Length: 332
Ligand code: TYM
Image (cartoon, rainbow, N blue to C red; front, top):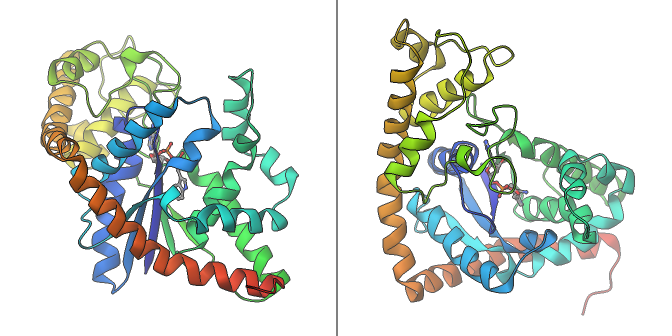
């Protein structure tokens, strides 16, 4: 079993990224190895230039994005961890896949529609972004792609692109399947529980960042928006705020939603919010400590990056060559 996932090198990483991203990477790394397969995790810096960015910030967030992957449990000795721009096969394959992707498909991507609305200058790269994501996945003959719910549509498009390529040019690419977590696939902003938790929009007070100090995290949970009731019950339609907190509690402590509900039966919101905050602090503190250590030694990080990209290129380049060949390119 081959596993591949990517995470952007932009914005501070959030509890949402932990839930839909890091947490699943760790599980899938073990699952892949147990099944005799392997896992690939990539800091997708080429994706980060599709929305407004600053060169200095990109540099820093690529290093920190790489450090977070390792700090949260991806083991560079067992999985391949690398930076997308270090493996030129990614943008090359994206160009080839552009031949089997339609404008209509890209126009239907909800993330494009949402992000394009927020900007005066909409980069062409924002529109073609899902083709690069398809290239990331398909170059590694990926079976499973662990992501949060917001990326599901992109993985479905990747499947369509792979199938179309195979139909047109002969069996070449593995058609991957998506893996969303059972709970916490869509962690919401604590202040605006109808919005995804994201650093690019929504009230900052409702966004829990991986880098936030413990007291800041506690305060964010204490002031989380709930409702006028007092029952700790999972009902996303009627009780969006409390349901989000229940899911967060389930994610960070590894228990089921119904167990969280029964544990807080009759307890009221105040105590519950405080406990969720404390559980999140306990989860994130060791990650932050490890992150600080890793980030302090840039030379060591760069060595790991180099090792990772060499391993990744060893898998991606043969797939790219096969694609060129099947499409009728003469080759050098
Ligand atoms: P990115 O960098 O926005 O997010 C990384 C991962 O975190 C998940 N996530 C969430 N999950 C639950 N609740 C949230 N609030 C939340 N916010 C983020 C995302 O679903 C994702 O799994 N296009 C991708 C990066 C990418 C990629 C790939 C992923 C590029 N190439 C190939 C998989 C395979 C993105 O922007 O993720």
